[in-house]
Length: 372
Image (cartoon, rainbow, N blue to C red):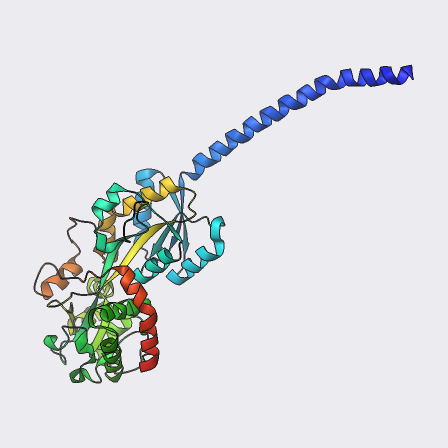
């Protein structure tokens, strides 16, 4: 028994230095872990995770300029608007997204309504971006900002259509234009936004009658994209088309002989200049609800409102900048304005939330009148 006691006492005595060493090692390990965590956090602050529905090669220069200016690298995930919103819903709190870029006002509104964005407080953004191009500001901040727009205009064949016969959206459904109209799918977001805006201007009943008239005036079933409508107008497949301006500008700035030939035959009208103004499709951005790098996210959104970024939108991708005080240098955009008798055009000012809310009933109208 005495031997056992001595053994236990001796073991306890020998283990004390070991326990002390383990304790010190744990403290050192925790300190190292904290250091690694801080280092990782610092590294994360230099990386921005971007979910983007903008698929334009010209935007690469935009991202490169941001990284050069701030030192913040961009990891980008590309998808269409609906795909990005669905991914954010599926990822929930584990989403790595910091900033979301979408190319349709109704999609921005949907992300806002679904609670996928975080409010941003930024005097720079509030001062630079007009209220009509952003979500309604709240005490917590603003949920999204529009950084560029595309006017939804009418393209017409100059040899077979008079400008005054297509200078309003309403005339697209007039019997004088029977058999002349071509569009992309009525359910495409660009058209849904336009139709939602028209519904707000003239009411639901008149909008449904207008859509029915457009179906009656179709030269062929809706198909293709906006560029396809422009080419169809030039070729004589139809005589009137609806398109966003940046598609026209691409053809106007092209060096290809066939593109120049197309634009020689096509006229451009900014509709409803004597009433509510031309409809605008908005491209904008928001901070993701579960953004981890919020400081970097705000910096990126503020950068998109800067003169250099706004110039990229205008010159690089043929879009209309939204920031106050910006002047257009893009030769194609300037030519469109001159061709319509001025150095600017009247744009509608309907809140994007209204356009978004109207889209469900507009889709039901399209189904009823057979607008494919």
